[in-house]
Image (cartoon, rainbow, N blue to C red):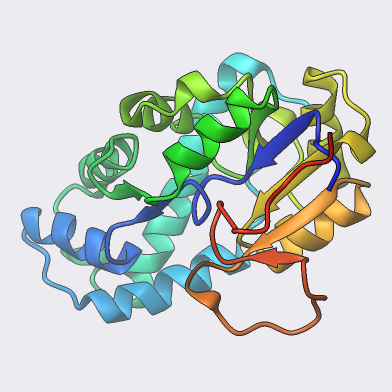
Length: 239
């Protein structure tokens, strides 16, 4: 296997995951505001709201306005989530609640780093491979990476809200590659989404690796196209 110049990695589901579920976090913080709601119901409502939303990308806007657009994008999703479970009207001050919710996800509290991440990043870095984050996350990713001690590994962070294009759009891959002055054929992209990471990276010309943590069932891949860990035993590079 030829050693790549750059390896790009997705964020959530690849580098770090959520403790429990989104519904559990929403329910915990709602309880602190005096609103009781089942986490399972919030999970289902969140998934529906998230999947029906437009991509978290804001082409053509002034960069200084990006944080406001990110905040409002997530506020709509949170509002729809609580409206679907019929408790939104129980909040005495939803704006204040959402401000706390949004800030909470900018910390390490709701997240955990997968156990294979630090060793994999260290190994690649020691091999002279440049590393980048390529994600549909928002600008809170900078504080999360910094707090976890991950920021030092990455020469670039490319996120959809800043590029104005979200995976699977090839433009976000082009933006990431440009930061490293790298041809697609000299780069890998690793992520947990079959559509947004694996298929999208392939179409953009990168070597794509689908990270199937917990070896989840999936169809449509060839042997060698997916890993169950960031440190597969057969990962070796040609000299």
